[in-house]
Length: 295
Image (tube, rainbow, N blue to C red):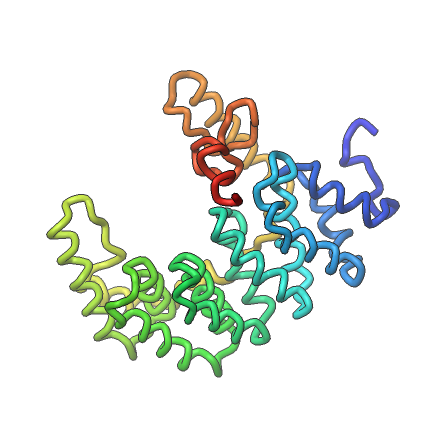
């Protein structure tokens, strides 16, 4: 075959389809994703093995993409049986700064639904998990609460508790505050104004500081029409659409060219091993980044 697009993917074995996750980079066709989802009964445990294996999250290109694909496809199956793998994905995506997975996990957990809620709450409570993983857990619970209305009031009260806790890191408190604003939680207006005042004071003390928002902005946010819930309902499977794949490749090709023509060399498509950049997108070498993390 001259092109993978010419293959009849229905004729491939399970193993041959899984191999494409490791070899296609970010160019995996939607037809492959759909065929794997159609075989979910057999594929779910195999995709789980890819996600839970820590070493897969730091593979060289193009194998690095396998964990992204496996996470996306498990999410698309919308099965509670995928929960152990998706909780592992939350952990490893945070540990290895995999933004492709971390940014879409809230929407993925939102589709998984209420069954994931207590496990995410456990992460949100776990101080040792780190603020970033906890923030992802909070946003994932928020995504569930977009449709699970009965959980929403209790969840927003919990988020407000995180916001009000001065012992928490500023990062997790910012994440909590933004969730309250996204849901237009007028019940927690005073907490939001108090935090906005804190942010303003930090800006006064540190010239370069950019707060999440400031106290004088809160009422405008809360009174605006509708809720800002699009982030919690992202269509992560659009990753495989032809137009999106082309847009992604055009962007990275342009950035590569600019880097070679005298840019700062921080090329956001970090997938040419010869250039030495880490596959997580940090802009530094693998030796100084994820290799250290995994060991």
